[in-house]
Length: 203
Image (cartoon, rainbow, N blue to C red; front, side, top):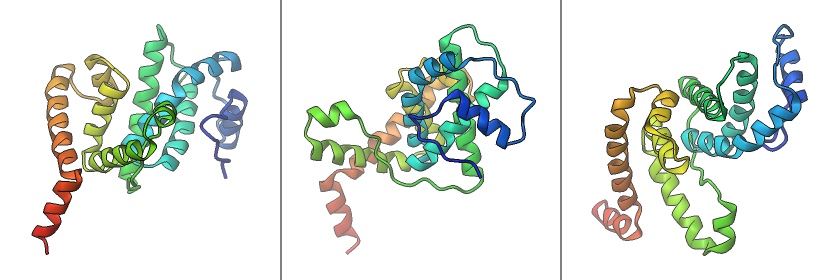
């Protein structure tokens, strides 16, 4: 049984141990631990947030984060720069999340924390806002969640989004427009006044 790793505690040596446990001793990892740690530190937080949002579960995100880096290292691919490495990680994560859905792992409500906002703002109001966003996002299609998060939380370009989620670059603008419109409507439905009116209609 694999030992589950905390998202902040993964090291190259632990990844190599996972490789041995999986019986893939012939795989060669071309990154040394320092290079892997630097890549991990630059990408892990954003990647975990993406996985948590598109799967709806922090626990699932923890597991898929580990698997994403494991598969990235096993691929032995070469990349021109950090942007290409980052896109590869997000593409692997997207495919893993898709596999979870195919296996019937259902999303649960999760509000993604932001330590800086929570520390400086109104904690109760911020928590409520994030829970409303999580509920609204949970009603979107997985690809819609992924594209919105990449575009507005990660600032990804349309070309990068297309590469990560597997659509044509020319279609990203329209797909994002539709997803934004759908999310805006869902958020309006989440407002307390709207929920109270909706509730009276069902009495």
